[in-house]
Amino acid sequence: MPATSIHDFQALSIEGKPADLGTQRGKVLLIVNTASACGFTPQFAGLEALWQRYRDRGLVVVGFPCNQFGGQDPGSDDEIGAFCQRNYGVSFPMMAKVDVNGPQAHPLWQWLTAQAPGVLGSKAIKWNFTKFLVGRDGQVIRRYAPTDTPESMAKDIEAALAA
Image 1 (cartoon, rainbow, N blue to C red):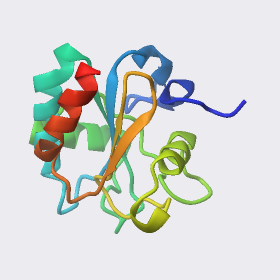
Image 2 (image 1 turned 45 degrees about the horizontal axis):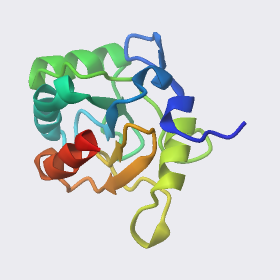
Image 3 (image 1 turned 90 degrees about the vertical axis):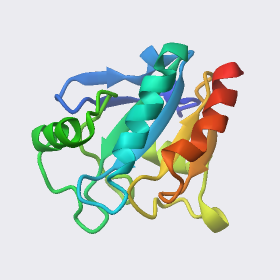
Image 4 (image 1 turned 60 degrees about the vertical axis):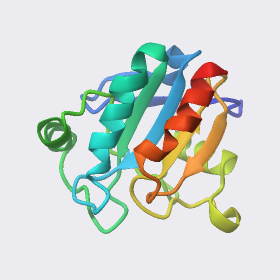
């Protein structure tokens, strides 16, 4: 059966445990493809700040490491998790490394890009730190470019939390 919301997907946590996104029903999700050695890597701090600021109101930030852009996240899941925690104090959920483009792309990312295409209708993720805001109903509200800072999304997150 084709997926109708983000709640239809599963992933693996960075610790290798199954993570059912159906358990996040009723929450607002910010899904991000991350990398540890990218010019945008400092956005981890902003993402953590959003998580700290809004999690009690129902926001869940979820990071998906990806090594498809310039080989900027070559480490193991353990190394990536330790890097994010040590350098940026990341406490929001991080998933196991995935592909976000191509034939091996994680099904969640195939769905996200179909729901919210990029510039000129392109489905492909162009670079690290592309972000998707998903409403409490499990539907994609908006896709953000890597250059969109976490801070710039606060108004949209507040609106989604209020909906």
